[in-house]
Image (cartoon, rainbow, N blue to C red):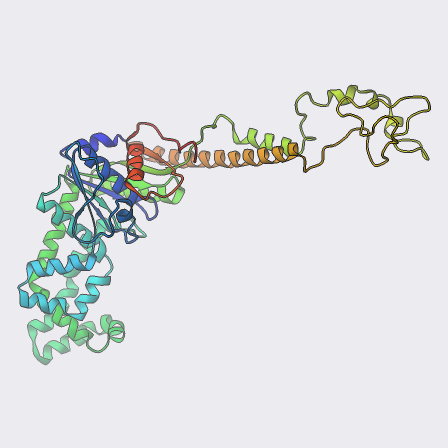
Amino acid sequence: MLDVDPLLDDPQTRIVVCCGSGGVGKTTTAAALGLRAAERGRKVVVLTIDPARRLAQSMGIDSLDNTPRRVKGVDDSAGGELHAMMLDMKRTFDEIVEAHADPDRAAAILGNPFYQSLSAGFAGTQEYMAMEKLGQLRGRDEWDLIVVDTPPSRSALDFLDAPKRLGSFLDGKLIRVLLAPAKVGGRAGMKFLNVGMSMMTGVLGKVLGGQFLKDVQTFVAAMDSMFGGFRTRADATYKLLQAPGTAFLVVAAPERDALREAAYFVQRLAAEDMPLAGLVLNRVHGSGADRLSAERAIAAAENLEDPRIVDQGDGKAGVRNSPDTQGSSESAEPESGAAPDATAPGSAPTPSPEAPSPTAPGTPADPSAGTQATAPDDTPERSVDGLAAGLLRLHAERMHLLAREQRTRDRFTARHPEVAVTEVAALPGDVHDLAGLRDVGARLATDRPELPDPGA
């Protein structure tokens, strides 16, 4: 089992990175870990890249931006603090330009159309800027624990690949080709650009207009002195993620696709020599009545819905031993011309042991009534039976879900027995305040899977 509290309490742990595929609860997990660490005495900042702003709402903050904001309502009796921020991708890029260029060159870069497009939507820019912001926070040394909620992307590996990818782009062959005309100058330079880049920029030139090539050239010339810095910072942040003070937590749901992605990420972390603390298995279902198997629940439901399938209680012993059922087919089928349920002259009708006679003494028997009264389907007894049968079938579905989740987890642990795991029970609703985050943190730190609230 993954023991979260020693990880959070260890002063050597400076960065916790929550990663995994989209929609598995990374943001909630990161916020809950940050809150728990702060209330145990750490000075924590949570960096989220989630555009849904759920973190701000759960922490009671109107909005988050690129500046860490202190969260109110945190129990600071142990001396801890909690701050939270949400990455502003473009603003982070702007800060890099402003910090590493003189005012005139920075103004030229920030106003360049190609830079504006690059800083707002280039593939991998968000992940790279998350790494940049992480490096900035760590360099300030203002917090003793940084919890990172990685970007929601199709592949959790983008967070690791982005620094190298964007660093290679800004320091690679493309930039050297784009920079060549500025260095060569004149018509020869532009001719070289047209020959070397016509295939690559044709489509972009149509989309962005005739000024595209000029904008790119101007941007590259202005950024020339900064390209080496991007590569250097990317490499430094990558090494920071490999350092002993960093811990990766892979977050997943007990579903096949999510755990397949988690397994792939575990392998990648091992290949990159990055420290994996364990797996957080979110939204695990449980039941307080797991001793009743799905098969028994279904059988009981069928019995309630159709009592003729399996005898209930004392069975039909009373019916089999009653005088009405003795004899042969004469008692079951009256002779032709005889009234139904008619008795022999001079004999008194014998009531069934299971039900009283439907007629009062001296009242003619109802021809439509049988020898045994049958409760109509709309009686309270039948309504209760139907409700009980429905609940039993719901329980059976729950047991099937539990079994499927357990099989999925068992496959993961069989392939990765070295990975410590902690489970967090599925909650009855969304987490929307500090109390909910505190509850999730307690479930993360427990040494056994927690069940949902009994009233849920």
